[in-house]
Image (tube, rainbow, N blue to C red; front, side):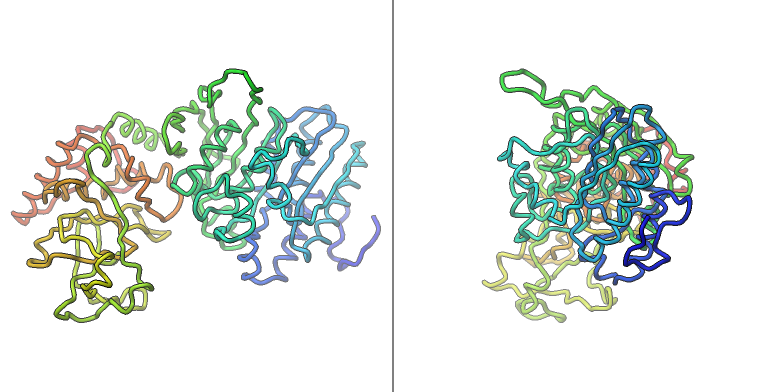
Length: 545
């Protein structure tokens, strides 16, 4: 190997594997750039143990293999994959690698990694070529998303740790991908879709990404397209938000997925839309990297994790037998807000757009304004004198012609927080709201960080609001929500189709709790939920009851 312009300490060490060398390059580069640079590019290098674990998902057996890494960084995933092919394959004779990287400062390090990888492979009798593309991966391949291009390079394996950040609607990459995204999506989903399109039939895709695509309306179109192109085969969950990228101190619920490109359906051929929904998915989990070799593994029918006939096509990821039990319970429930003529909406008062309307003291033409922090589990607190996140929040909003479109009628509602903190012990936090809290008030304001549930044609009774709030606050509902929701957002769209038990039983639950409240007797929501809906499930191991 010839020395190059890099620091002497960045040359490969004697006997060093290419992936180890790439990891050393990544640590060096990460020490030279700012956190702001990492955040702007969504650039967080894959730790070596994770890269090796992902590489071992590979099961392609061919003499010549063409690999794509659409966001290569220093090249650790490509290097680890090549090593796995050498050790696990009996046929491999030639590897052709295509990589994309737009960070110009990173290119010399990536090139150094791939040159050493070639040297390492050649010594093992394997021919190696690589092409390092400096173009933006999405813009370079955007035509495949809209099927405007019939001839493009395809690959046997695509492996990636794509960038993670939200794409503004006016971003040129979002515009190029507008046929496959809805609203403000995350850039990693566009990487996934393009990669899926660039695979050969039965070729393999291996990605590590956030799990946020599993649910949510912004990702619905992505799931629709993605699940029609690929069959999921393996999914690995990291139970800890901190574990996968702890070197960069990233709080993110990550998963590793392995998928196979579906067989192409020729024009005129008949095929079901989701041809392999009777197939299986291997689901594994570990707390983090250290215990990845002791991971828990179980196989599931694809249709038990994804309802391919549903509109949302949510992907459930149970990580325990208890999760499985909870999912089965919800599958037996046939109700929903929609079926019960209930609606869920998001508060219309946006803080920064309504500053001139918000008041800190009661005025003649001011009405109550409800914020996220006014809502605790089963408890509506107003006014809330305590400062919230360093700021005091005005508890009133002016009622006049300018604010009327942002106000709602003072009726009985269920108030539900749209966000929880990353370390909160529950995702769903709801409280019943009684219109008699503000007698004589015709309108109220609900801030944008709150969802509110109401009856479309009538008005919820107090017992109904209490029953609905109780089940939303229960551990049972929280566990179910966590099987598909991997972020802190509580989407109104998801809850609109949320499976619910009999509405009569929900009302009965509310009646029982209302009785306890009237007599000032303490009550246990968890036991009442299990008793009312006749459920035999033990939640104590998870929540320490």
